[in-house]
Amino acid sequence: DGPRNRLNSRHTSDYRLTDLGRVQASRAGRILQDRVGSFDKMFCSEYVRAVETSGHMALPESNFQTDFLIREQDNGGQKGQTSPLEEYSKATRPLARWWVRKGGLGESFADMCVRLRLFLDQLRDTAAGLRVVVVCHANVIRGFRALLEDVKATEYNE
Image: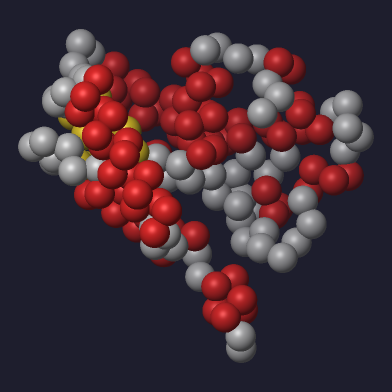
């Protein structure tokens, strides 16, 4: 049981922020304070690193609510496995990213986007016209972009 095996046995929700992550969170907080000021509603993923990020942002009057809908895309225990997308040709791989479930048991990008749509619907109902900050993860940000920019699966290449 070396360090790599111990790391691979943990769920990514338990991963802590790195030193670089703490520096980046502090910088993001300063930028948001300078450009936006304060926020009316604050949300973050319930993953440890997102909660830590929200704290290191040091936003005035911080009052973050955790929300499971904005957690990272579930990889379904894919660690150490080859990507399920490898079986697709280079031409069809971007489209397959939307629909193929990661690790067989995880979420596809489309699955995650359905969950994110629920979060956006809640925001529409409870925070219309308010300044909202959301601390989340890379794939979640890509999902929000796809939803908010109305990107079609055939056009999505990231």
